[in-house]
Image: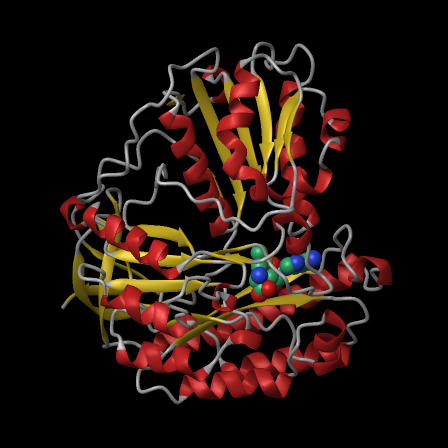
Length: 468
Ligand code: SAM
């Protein structure tokens, strides 16, 4: 769940079925100049999605209007992801549509996020149609950078990583009418050998607990009941305020906020996963019974080469601690196959760990060498074909585990928050606190409501139910 890849085009409306939601409509602070309309497309993780929500808020506050077709936009923005090579390439294929004489004339094209930070000013050479390049650590400069674009500057950049600030803004335009994302920590100070994030998102910086809790209260006032706390390593959060709350205490405070019914948090790092987090989940029903804990590999030698900071056994100790909770906590993870030097034996260690833990969901990826990472200097020994075969084997094992685990839920009841209605099937789509997708006969008026359902059928990826 933590790292589900999403690619969304941000539209004017979140849909007609939205419950009582009053996304912040900030008062325009300046009269629109030549940039009157904008289009933004987002690639990557939830943090990118939420960054785009904040960027949209800034643009709306300038009096700009969102459009759902880039052909109608004065300003076209791509918020990019560079976690794997394939993700990074997406923006270049989008930009291909705006080569000379190809629909880009008169428009300002900007690239935001991780690929922007990674490529920096080189972007202008590689894609001369781009006039604006800005990494996430510079988003607080957006109003100033946009002013320069309005004034006609041809090349505008925000690329400094030298920041101790988070992108704090009240001008967020949230697009999910049910779950409000809320970033509590930005950047990353870990140096996992495979990961580009510290180079693209800058140093780790935490928001003070009081500001986070103020935002939670505002979100409740706007009608949200589910809050998802975000961070590249969310549980590395450290309160910079005098209150000095621990991460588990912050979770408890968010869960105790009147009006909050569900709290999720992602992504946790095993290194910072302490027993008090499990205790907080146990004692606060509003904290969802779900933990996403990326393991990356089940082999200690591979984990060592990845510089993850834990062994297979230490990871399994965290899992034991979660399993000992009074509530049954659902587990999900991220796994990389084919990391430098991964032998068949290493890979089998990963399969055996999956069998031991029995995750409810696994996000699995082929290792992709990334620029400026330690692992990139070690070569990419495993052939793509072999990575593909291992990935397929791992995914098939997980499919069987999920099917078995879901079938064991037949007859059980769950509370779901209904997120959508599929008119063609007459089905409502809900989500349990364990993050399971549950389909059941329902009507459009169910959307946004909490309902109790009883499971009558199970597939590997979702459950079928009836109203209880
Ligand atoms: N910050 C989180 C952490 O360290 O656990 C994860 C963030 S990352 C956006 C999501 C997932 O992408 C990682 O957990 C990892 O499984 C995967 N990933 C990161 N770098 C990768 C790479 N170079 N090749 C393949 N997968 C990668």
